[in-house]
Image: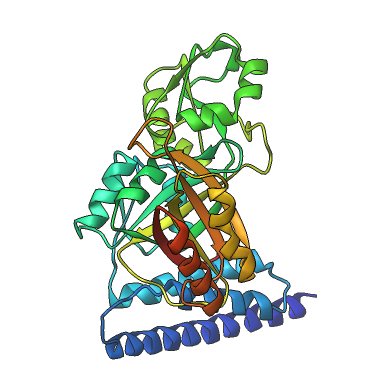
Length: 355
């Protein structure tokens, strides 16, 4: 048995060296490709999505696809950093779900610039201070993030990627007794996501909405009678204990984040196109406006209304459809919708989130 163990460990050592050599060769090859690029663009979401999908498809096990994609996301991140360690703006302070979404999508080698608001994330990218931004778009429990939608409508930036992040909320505090908690800080959406749990377990605690869950954790660290609802990473950053874990009312609670930049993305083979539009004020306008999708065999995956802020009871509609705007059937559908819409803006075509 001892000899078998020794042999297996020797085999692992040899495999580790082989993996190291292959990773180094991959990094050198990626660096060489970077030198040949005409436009100097380092981040190619369509190419990275294709790589991760292929690896998941060809994964022989025993590692789950999710683990394989995480490993290769970090390999890609490290290779990308050899060309240019571009920064990504996200909502701060440290420990937000937005920051987690950056790491999930770009890997740990992408420097994160933490912003005080979603508006500041957009401004940072628009000004060129950072290459990309990560902003929340919608939550499976609480719906759309209105400020992100409003800024997408007015900003010249495009959506160039999406991230689906499972959101597990936790009650964090420096204290040790849930019954002693008198106030709970969190983002308004997180408070809503945990409403039933709070009613049952902290019925008398004051609920205080703040700009982010990480800001809630920062406030809770100074007062044993306060708590925060946030992710587990925030507990480590701010020296808090987890009084209760996974307190969200819906176990499949997920937030969809989008990556914003000025970059146009080529088709990856499994894409989504987002747009915002408004109808003319005539009977049956919405039905007619969506008819080009059916005629061209394009599936709509999301339709959401939002006040236009240009007049009382006037609305714009945010729509997601399957496919890339450069694909023939999608291009035909968009052309037909433009002829009927009072206003139409394509927010971007980008790879469907790789799970």
